[in-house]
Amino acid sequence: MRHIIVLSDDNSIQGEISRTLEQAGYKVSAMEFSAVSSELLMQQPELILLDTSLSNTKAYMLYDKLKDGMIIPEIPILFLVEGDNESILKAVKAGAADVITKPILPEILTNRANLQLELMEYRKKVPEVEKYQDAISVSFAELVECRDYTTGGHLKNTTLYFKILLEEVLKQDKYKHLFSQEEVRDLVRAAPLHDIGKIGINDDILRKASTLNYNEFEYMKTHTILGKETFEKIIKETGGTRVLQLAKDLAYCHHERWDGTGYPSGLKGDEIPLYARILTIADVYDALTSDRAYKEAFSHQKALKIITEGKGSIFDPDLIDIFIHINERFEQALYQKEQEGAVS
Image 1: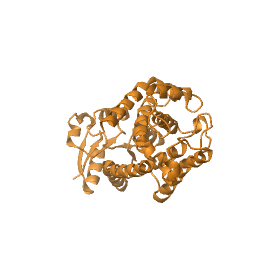
Image 2 (image 1 turned 120 degrees about the vertical axis):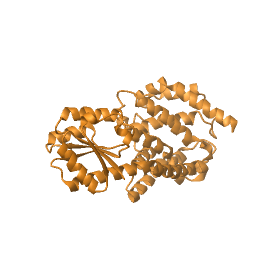
Image 3 (image 1 turned 90 degrees about the horizontal axis):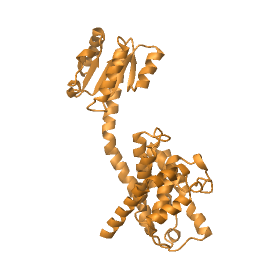
Image 4 (image 1 turned 30 degrees about the vertical axis):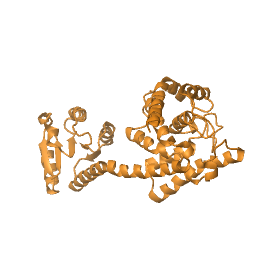
């Protein structure tokens, strides 16, 4: 039986909620604020209802205490509030999973409880769903590498460099509030798909063992547009997810340049999504430090010099400063890649 805890200093509220939820088939434990102890969450509740009406300040202090000591961080906490806008807004800003206003209607209480518990069940399944999504995504990405054998390991390497730089960028005050942990995870999941459009490029161009001429290079550029169109079709059919939206942007924008001379749209500066500007540095670093049919791999120091020279033209100058600051981490990752290559 699913367990819900009700926290209220109003005995009538405790009784009203308990009766409603027990009739709906839930196990309910109701207690006053003073009865809350460290053993509370050992009862493994799946939902907590917190009444803020009688002692507003006390309720919010208890909420902070609960969140700080939460054994299961995913437990949703619903706030019971007075029906005025100020109380509702305060609860939302505090982080309430949902808000139920007074007077409490049994149908609404039961519906909101059911909804939160269904959402919690879904969140538990998300890692399993994502595992299959990632398997499909990686398979698509590997199709590119199967056809373009001149860039073996590029997607894996670029994703690793992208993750290193992204994590450091988000430590900076200027950027640290831009993405949630879930968005960061989705960005790392989307990064390997940035070259998916190369599936549509002819083999004689994709596998050419020398530098492309002008017309060939213009044709190769279209992989960014093909990538965008591929994801747009998937999004249209499925309704899309954040990962697909991010993958579309990365596929389309990872060859744009800070000064507006990149392709396919000539986006400039902040017109280019931050995550695409980060990927551009990771992408170029891997290209420079990897063997290609037309060149041998450059050393870390030479790649660092070339990328630094592109500050303010090819690359976002702020991001280059961060890249320079942590370049040793790139060097370590490159060394690890080389060691693994030597063993295999």
